Length: 151
Image (cartoon, rainbow, N blue to C red; front, side, top):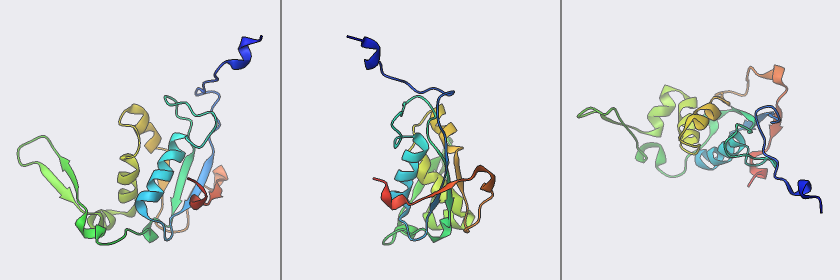
């Protein structure tokens, strides 16, 4: 019996096939879309997924200003941060994050769904968020992906 046919193939930086993907956020729920985008960034939809390698795609989110949160989450949900000093606890709502820039809300949501290590920080750099329908990555020839077709 040939034992080499049963060898598990592990992807590395040289063998990874990274693509560019455009996702439209119009009418999408922020959290559900964020989890699917995090899986795309991580590479979990690919057959050669390797946990310790950046094997995910580069994701471009367009129309980020048209994403929705259900119920009263725009004002009732609170994100906390702490500086480490006494009295250094800060809180911010999704509505205030949206005022600062639409990319901040999506970036915060997706960052929470990625690994909390160097790989997670590297994966977050593969995410590009734009408020309108235009983006500046036409040279990479990204393909449009229907986010609802993913599990």
